[in-house]
Image (cartoon, rainbow, N blue to C red; front, side, top):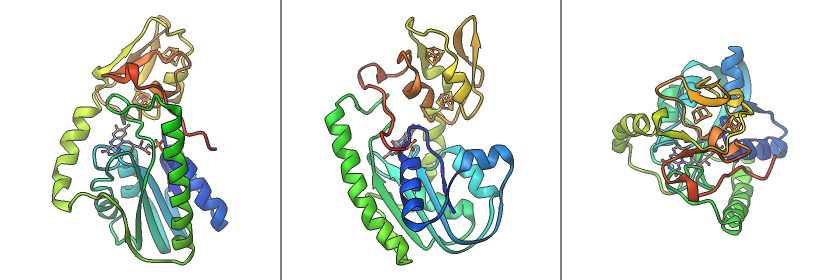
Length: 242
Ligand SMILES: Cc1cc2nc3c(=O)[nH]c(=O)nc-3n(C[C@H](O)[C@H](O)[C@H](O)COP(=O)(O)O)c2cc1C
Ligand code: SF4
Ligand code: SF4
């Protein structure tokens, strides 16, 4: 089984491509957590596909890995990332509580648009095309049950001590603001994986101090009305694949 967490579609695309090629199943970690389906006694392959958040994993992935009960004969991990996968493999092994046979990183468009610019569709398409090519190699390695680290641009393990503070700093919901263009459709609240948004008087209000900070609300809004930092000029993003 190939488990993924995805906000803007990069990891879902990766997990589904691998599942299609290997005859396996791609499963959402968030759905498993919400349904409390966390026991998978006998799996030939365990795949974990996660975005990089502040050089570590999203809190939802941490939680899934710490609670899942799974036996597998071959385990692989893929971190999608924009600039560096940081210490993601270190955290994946730590929370899973055992060694991962093969570790990969895949550069994709960086959806942290408070900092990174995804407003050029040609550049975004080129990054996705390069990722799609590299994924072919990774699928071949996974099918061959190769082991080892195929990660690029990793950070040394000792830097993992910075993840918690950096992530906590990024994930404060007070960073969000809502533009007048909001039409009160409620999509942001409906799809938030944390139930961190409520609609009050037809406007989104963040009801939790911290959230996963997946930025799904910002990227999905039909009016691009949610902003964070300099995201104004950096566009919205969703992976064009499935
Ligand atoms: C809160 C947050 C923090 C992020 N931190 C990093 C990071 O430390 N390094 C990096 O290369 N990309 C980082 N990213 C970018 C994502 O890891 C990347 O765009 C990923 O492919 C998104 O996957 P998804 O489309 O499946 O959600 C971050 C994104 C978010 C929303
Ligand atoms: S998705 Fe956008 S338009 Fe709809 S309620 Fe949320 S902020 Fe407003
Ligand atoms: S409030 Fe927005 S960024 Fe935070 S978890 Fe919900 S959808 Fe993701």
